Image (cartoon, rainbow, N blue to C red; front, side, top):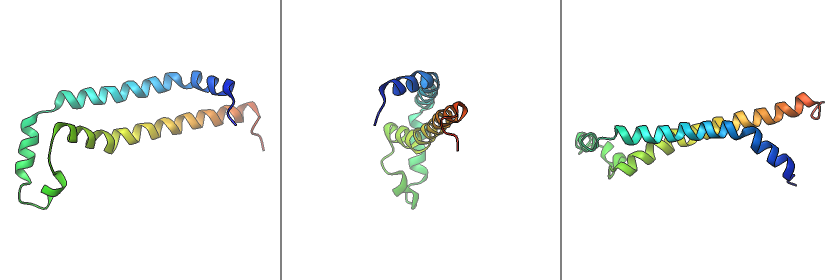
Length: 102
């Protein structure tokens, strides 16, 4: 069962942390877009031509590179860190108040 007052309080308590992680992820996107150079991507494709790695690289595009780097590392790692920090603070507050005592 979902308690609306507790849900609202939890959102208010963790809004700053969520905002910080959102800004960090946006900065990563901006940096990835800013450092992208099409010649680098084409030279990488040329280097692995006729090797077994050519199948892994596939059709190298900007969107493919952005998706692989973001969803391969940042899109998974940062939300997991946020979830762990939020869950820890939610449980710790209940233990401190004594409502989850042994």
